Every structure is written in structure tokens, then in C-alpha cells.
Amino acid sequence: MSQDHLNDARFETRTIHAGQGPDPQTGAVMTPVYLTSTYAQTSPGQTIGGYEYSRTHNPTRTALQDNLASLEGGAWGLCFSSGLAATNALMDRLVPGDHVIAGNDLYGGTYRIFTKVFERYGIEFSFVDTRDVESIRGALTPKTKYVYIETPSNPLLNLTDIAAAAEITHAGGAQLVVDNTFATPALQRPLELGADIVLHSLTKYLGGHSDVVAGALIGNDQTTQEELAFYQNSVGGTPGAMDAFLVLRGTKTLAIRMQRHGENALAVAKHLEAHDGVEKVFYPGLPSFPQHELAKRQMASGGGMVSFELKGGVLAGETFASSTKIFTLAESLGGVESLVETPPSMTHASIPPEVRHAAGLMDGLVRLSVGIEHVDDLIADIDQALVTALATANQHG
Ligand SMILES: *Cc1c(COP(=O)(O)O)cnc(C)c1O
Image (cartoon, rainbow, N blue to C red):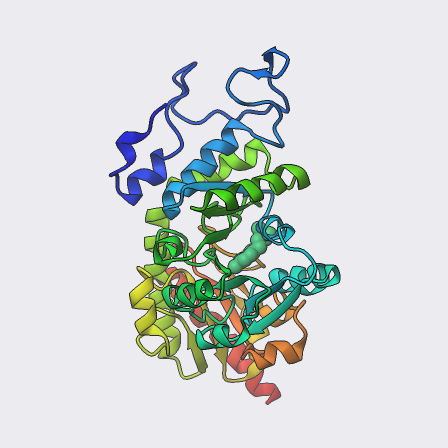
């Protein structure tokens, strides 16, 4: 069904409708979950709707891919069975000797797939602090194929100036990949700022309910799409139809969820910053954040993630994370429910301590995924956990 009427529609409208018209056969308003591996053909090689096998194409996945492309302002989207399967598909385009420049404060699993999987295949990586985009220029070589950044980064919420990074990357003949998992297209659209490929862990805010693992790549260049679709089909890390449906259900509420995540996280960050027992708060929406001006330029709000260090270090941080009652102690992020974790011993344990410390990720760091519960309940929970954490640290300090 033509979706031309959505061309001028606003973001909130496209979250709900892009990629998803009523089902032509039954009128079903919600996209059907096409639980089928194969499709009938009218004569050998003649498909009915272009579908032959669900690793290659599935209508529920097509709806999600079109929805995500619309939200990021891209021409195409490709979905994968996880965010890391999407990263893997990107890396499958490279050959031995190719070079990638990556941020030095990446999701731990991204660092692991780069250093433990793709370095073995002769792909070379330089990890640089992309808060200073000139560090990208300095690391470019004739073999550089990608500059791969996360902004805001995980877990320190460091920002990279996407427009400036795109200019430097293109001058070096490489493609700029932006992991937009933390900001989501509701707050930041890297393709509009010059990036070539956006990567998502759909597991996080786009799914939004902590009930599915999936990933996506989105872009504009047709040759890039064809190459990545080749690897999507050839390697086969594709999501099932039910997973695609769950993410589609999630994106429908993305705009209002991100608004509330941002409001709650800002209130939590301000509250923590004002507390005597807190050493340092990392949140792009705080005026005290070193890159707050850049945040205001390329993001609509600071997002839902807040990290902080307590006076009392590792013991205080780990006690805090074990003492909250509404914030659940768990890895992952981006669901409607609030979560707390300690990156050095959980999500980022796969990064060697000396590498973490060099990037400013200290052992007492606590990371919050601030959910959409009532903010007063969240702040009360933080306060009671702070009392326990600081008392414990004092006893042992
Ligand atoms: C979770 C995450 C990933 C990896 O995605 P999976 O769906 O877990 O494979 C990549 N980047 C960021 C920023 C993440 O938070």
C-alpha cells in the first residue's frame, strides 16, 4: 500500500504508521505476525509478493525495516537477530588489512567482537577518544573503512560531534557508523547530520519493554544496502517474525516514552548532583556536563541514561546497586522499568581494567536506566539506597 501520505507526517505519526498499513487481505489494523518459513510460488521462480524464504524476507520484518528507515530519515533498514549481529554484518564487508577507527568508550560487547573476533581475521582497529574529533583525523589511514562511534557512549555518556565527525570521515574516504541505541531517533538523527549508517540494538529503547533481542542497520546509500542485505541473507542472523512484531509494538510509543525517560532522568541527575555523597554525575542534559552545548545542538534531550560515582568508591557503588527496590539490579537498558548496574563488574567486564581506566571508566561507577515510573518514587528509592551505600562505605572506610 502506498505510504505517500506519510511523507510530510511528523515523527510521532510515523512511529505508529510508517511501514504498516492495514493488511490488504483482511483489513487487520495491526501488522500480522507472519510465522512462515516459506511462501507458495505460482510457477517455478514466480513469487506472489516477492517473498520466497523467511531468512531472505519476511513481511513482518519488512514492516519493521520500513518503520525504522522512516524514523531515522533513511532510505532503507535491515534488521538482525541482535545489535551485535548487526555489527557483525557491517564487519563482514571488510577484508584482512582493512582498518576501523572506533570510540574508546564503546558498549562492552562491541569492543569484544572487534578485538576478540574480527582482529583474528586481520581487521585492524584504532580506539580513540572521539570527544575530540581531531583524534579521528589523526587515526585515518588509506585502509580505514569505517569510523564507528557511540554517542552518547555507554556508560560515560560521552558525546561525539556527529556532523564534524562525518566531515572528517568522508574526507578520509571512509563511512561513518553511529550506534544510536542510547539516543534513539526520537532524540537524535545521525543520518540527517551526515552519518552513513545508523546501528541500533533494538533490544533497548526501540523495543522498549525488555522482552526482545534484535538489531538494525539503517542508511541511504543503495550500494551499501545491497552489500549488507547480501550478508544479512548469506550469514543469516535475522530476527523471527514475532521479534519483529514486538519491536513494532515498541516503536509506536517511542516518542512519548523518550519524552518521559528524559524528564525523569534529568530530575534524577539533578537530585544526585545535589547530594553530598555523590562524587560525580554523568548526564548530557545537565548544564554542568562538559559537552552540554553539543548535547543541546544534536540531541532533543539528554535521554534516559544516568551514570554516577559515589564518594566511597566501589563498595558504595556496589552496595547502592544491591539496595534499590524499584530499580532492578540487571544488565541492559531502555525498558519502561528502571534498572541499575555497575558497569565494571557487569556490562563492561569484558574490557580489561587498564583499558577501562584509561577511558575514565572508574571501578565505582553506577549506571541507571531511568524508566517511566513516577519520578518521586524513583528519587525516594535512590535516597534510601544512598543511605545504605554511604553508611556501609563509612563503616569500612
Ligand atoms: C546492547 C547494546 C548493543 C548490542 O546489542 P544486542 O542487542 O545486545 O546485541 C550495542 N550497542 C549498545 C549501545 C548497546 O547498548
